[in-house]
Amino acid sequence: MQLLPSAILAPYIKNYTVVTIGEDLDNEVFYPSGYMDFVINLSGAAATIINGRRKDLPEIELLGHLTLPTRLTVAKGTVVLIARIYPHAGALFFPNPLSEFTNYATDLYDIRLPEIRELYGRIMEAGAIRQKIRVLEQFFLAQLAKQEKHLQKVAMVQQFSGLLLSGDDKLDLPAIARKSGMSERYIQKLCLLHIGISPAALAAVVRFNRTLRLVLDTPASLTAIAYEGSYYDQAHFIKEFRKFTGITPSAARQRLAKDDVALQQAVNIGF
Image (cartoon, rainbow, N blue to C red; front, side):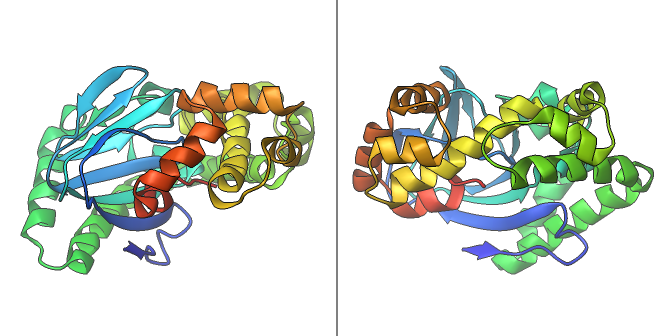
């Protein structure tokens, strides 16, 4: 189940997704999406394993940008509500530098205990999913109102990240700097503070996601996908895929055939 945010939040939040796990999942591959995910555990139990380190899902979690192999272990019947936040918008809702959240699943009680605990209580007291999302939207709107003076800087981050995401699959930071009117050094600094990863890392995740769609949704050969993704060759593509996931593209196709397609589509596909 996927719902869109209100018009005010649409520039900052991509969507809200409710995922219900239909079977036990053990060590399931979780692909980097290029987004930050605000994850609310409505029921059940799950754990994120990032680069071999396990973290049980708390009541509310912030999953930062992923650039390392990640796995999920989830009990059947688990239900989570996920707010997917655009790369440029994370600093509006969470303290920066956002690089502190990269490759980590953070229990938000560790960041703002009273406020987040109250939010979770109100979400759980709400009835239908739409009512729960309404409570969550009120929280995001309240955070947005506190950050009005920072909207201009966020707009700058959105500008250069938009240029990066709309280009081809190779990062051309000098060209982005010329088009945005910002220096390369300043773009690097803004990216780490407000997105959490470097421009090169974001470009790599975007390229990975474009090829991931071809791996999971088409029978195209790995050579053809490597060419489409502007990798040097098939070997380079496989190496980059393994860097993010710990498995090969062929193994990803095999897992999709036996695992929950709905889960993959809901939480494992980014740009």
